[in-house]
Image (cartoon, rainbow, N blue to C red; front, top):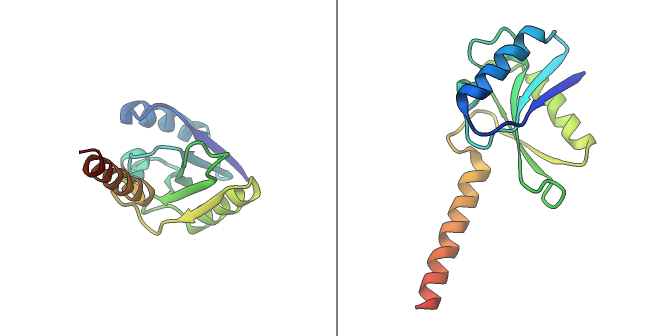
Length: 128
């Protein structure tokens, strides 16, 4: 098993271009992964020949302090791709969490934004 992980800026067209090129080079033994923090797998991978091998592996930053990584499949992602990615993340010391489907903002971002928003409200109340 091999994995190719893309880590470019959050630019949908750039990521789609890169995955389009990777799709031409990939064989059936490669997992194509993005570290996007907000772009849905359907936006990134739909129409690719190897879509069954595509997954989002969204890490928390910095990953060496918070080893959580959210695995988000495309609706056509093969369950084996999800399991192989999960196993690889465990092997390298990450704590992967499997999502069964994509959701806007992913779970981690939505929870973090709720906590940050409440922290700002509390700070505002306490300060004045």
